[in-house]
Image 1 (cartoon, rainbow, N blue to C red):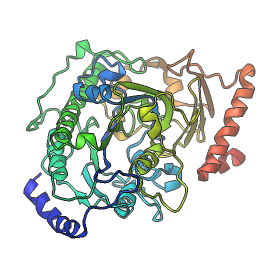
Image 2 (tube, rainbow, N blue to C red; image 1 turned 90 degrees about the vertical axis):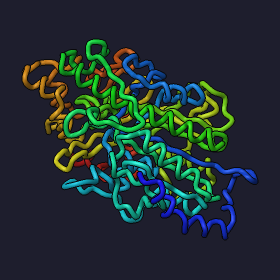
Image 3 (tube, rainbow, N blue to C red; image 1 turned 180 degrees about the vertical axis):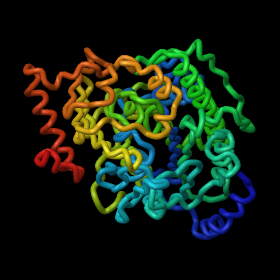
Image 4 (cartoon, rainbow, N blue to C red; image 1 turned 30 degrees about the vertical axis):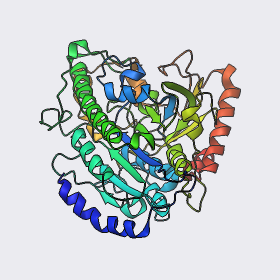
Length: 468
């Protein structure tokens, strides 16, 4: 990015703010600002050292966790880029906000015009909001950022340059508190591989030996899978370096003492069996938060979802929410109190990824059970274009294998209408207990509770319970 261009674009607003005086932020002590940074990875699972992944080279993300709070039970509501981001930025499930699938290209899904996004809500409260990196929701007017950093040189792959852009924004002579949405494209797949072959100024390439990669149980342990995973982890390491530079900028400017930092991912890793599904590799994700003055190194067990991100930020900043009720709730207390909890189950919802990938799923997950309702179970499970073209999936097709990791080919491609898994006894979600007579009452209770969640969140697919 050309930093001088960013400075020139900000100058009129800076002058205006200096004439108006410092914005008052409800709930903030005099002379303090309650800044917010959301760092969002693209297609990244719990693949960090702090979550126990030995493949990961993530010292900076791990340091953030060591100084803050790591959430053990954090979930995206839908394992697809645009729908998930719309939930993050609106506090509404995507089946209600209208962003049913991907925003770009032929897919052309977008939120309803009445949705009030987080950037606009914060602007109304006196904040300056900056988008750095990937956006991927529509329409832009619903989620309007006052500033957008220029990422034309290397897109959102050069995480260190993104951090420099953030530093330039932070250092502007604007008295208003800031909200930065730092959204990397890593470790999303590129057209081929993960764009690791390019040179990124400021980034030190990290090489991963495929022979040393630990393959997760849901993937086949094959040479092409190991090579694919190694490339993925190299992309994760590049992202991590940007996180380190960003946190360094906060410390250099003194804003580490007044900024809520949230690190998360939009959905799980870009491999079949994870992204676009409702099994844990696709939806159980990293969430690391650091709030000023908190006790470091906390681990929270509260069950939270990405619908809770907007309510949490609104509570922290004191900003007003929209005129309609949000679907999530704040977990702000849970950042400093690991014993805090608000719910026993989380509700997940997926309908589309690409426009050709209609496969509505609604899920309730507790710490013990996961209940999945496949509302189009007669259809074969669809795969995203990037997953289908991946070396992992192409190798599976060439071998014409009967198993994919620890799951049978038939179980992966043809799902029953109802799935129930005992996560304590079966953490990899392999043994469907939905037809077990002894668990009939459990299935009925989950189904009833799921319907209530669909009613509460105004899910158009609620009618499927009666019509199909």
